[in-house]
Length: 372
Image 1: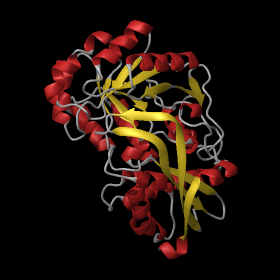
Image 2 (image 1 turned 45 degrees about the horizontal axis):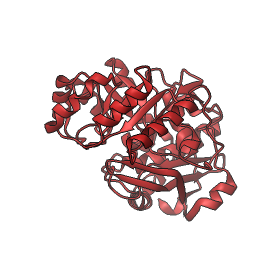
Image 3 (image 1 turned 30 degrees about the vertical axis):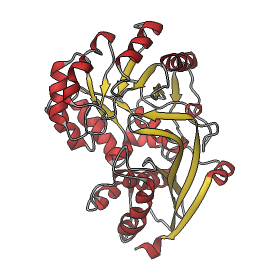
């Protein structure tokens, strides 16, 4: 496809409520969007990097800088460009998967839009809707947590995920189980907050019949995760450790996980995310789709990904009103615990121009011919 220009658009989106995890509390999302413009179509990508390098080494200012100085010029130097080339061409630049994923998403959206094909069909979706869970941050108290869980169950969410950290683990899980019973699909996410020295404490979660415990240890500690998997009954799920299809295969072979959370931004794009899905399917390992508090742009792409056959567990593909009073796109609305998979060309959604104008904090316009 032909690209004439790129816009790096920064937006500020206030969350409906603070979202606290073991690595910090978010009140607002500073988001970088990639807008590629061509004579036949345009495309949008959303970078999931956070404002500070706390969840990962990437952060939004750095992502914008490396896009402008290193990633986009390499693509602009090609005589022709396809989405399939993006990952391979950019692989010579070390790291920065979230920045790379946003560019690939924008190019893929434009390319498929020009063809009149949906991202869901391109990836190999087999469902028209996907089951949705909800991720609940660390609450200020047990009563506050129980009220939040009750509200989300009433909204129809099919699975509850609780963020945990040392000092906030056994008691909140016990309280949720006692209040809502064993029929609620329940899992926990540690975001690397523990170490193998905490194995005995984490084993105390076994009686609560959790779907999984997500990423208890640091991302490079596959040996620790494998040891923990042998010591506890709760299935171990990896998130931050899964940076590629190769990393997924390595983790599975080592016995470090029996479930994988796939995030396209973490693995460098939706095409690599599909490869992770395929590797896990070949090994009989279930996957689910994680989230990074995306706007409707990223959510649309995530829902398309979650419609692939091996996504057998409800993902963090929550409805728009879980995070935003007004989404950047037409809102995603929960229907019987599911979200509909967009069927339109590309990712199937576009930013609302009025909302986009209201939340935009800066726009950097780059001519494609000058980048190369």
